[in-house]
Image (cartoon, rainbow, N blue to C red; front, top):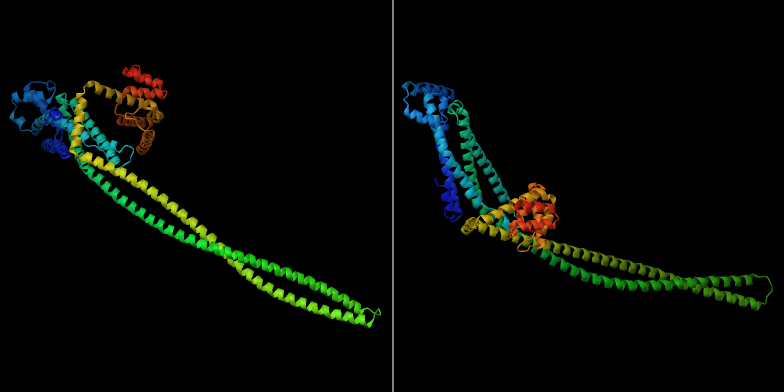
Length: 547
């Protein structure tokens, strides 16, 4: 088995595959040792622990000693080597089981520390270090496979830490129950069950590690699939843009044709409007003439009536005067006939003009309706074109977002595949260790201070994030996007305000290349959280920090 000290001093893995091989070697070694132990000591017939306890008492009588003289199995085993045992006892199954219990305890205590150390080294020395989602490279972009793998990493870590803690707890419990030896034998089913549970947990952690390795090895392929999907989706969007542009060109041509048709309709409407005006004027003239003729006819009828009255008058008049009256009456009748004839002509002309006016009026109205309809159709087409242009702009925005996500996916995939990434991470950890305790202490203090502040800042974490300094400087728009992303992630994961505050401070530390405790205190003072700033100063012995 390779010691942890030797692993820490070993060279960094040359590639992901090398890291996987190291992890698989650890896991396989653990599984082999557990299976060997289980085959020899757990997968066998049930042991009668009460019979073993009785056998222990019989042996102690033969040896003339008390069972309480043996604190653990080790003392009993040493005594057993130097003391003679009767053949009758040796042949008993309980005697064999008693020795088997001691051997099982010896193998367990020899195996478990090394196996546990391998599991811890496998998890915390390799898996936690080299299986990365690189979610920080995505910044404010929500990339589903990266988010999903980050959640999977957190789930794996939580699961493995919980099982490692259970293993540690089981080991401690075993240490408490292995004394005294007499109880250890009589209640052997307790520690046997504990051994079995520990072995099962170790196997489960090993399988979890293998599952994690499988998912980590598939991570670049998932990223590549997402890149291919983005590219195909981008091509589809570009096809949609081309289709929309064709529709716009077609609609623009239709609008041009409509515009020409509208101009023609407008000319026809104008011509018919003038014809209608002339027809209306002609009709009005004819109506006036008819009215004048009617007045003339009425006047002529009055004159004729007067002449008739004079002729019918019995007053004696000269024959010549009477003859003149008759002649005048005949002339008036002739004029009346002529007026009647003219009136009939005017009335026929009025009927014709009425017919012509109605026709030209109907045509004028039809051209007007067609022109207005054409104008409305042009307006609707322009609105459709505007909607298509807005849709094209929206598609371009989606394409830009896809390009950004694809670029990030390619970068993350390259980081995941490149052996230089693992070396860089390894060198960075070594450099941090070599920088001395002061830097580590400062970083640890800042991390603790962020946790402390997050418990007190509550819902004001957004205001604090806006007031914290960034080196290099971060634009206000970028800060607003950071807050929106943190809000969405917090809502998705159902985080409390305190957890959101801690997450925002972690974001600040990742974006700020020169994080210091003083910057955090100055941000609190800018937010008028003077009491909290003073608590941080007194807690970490920081002096002269003013906003």
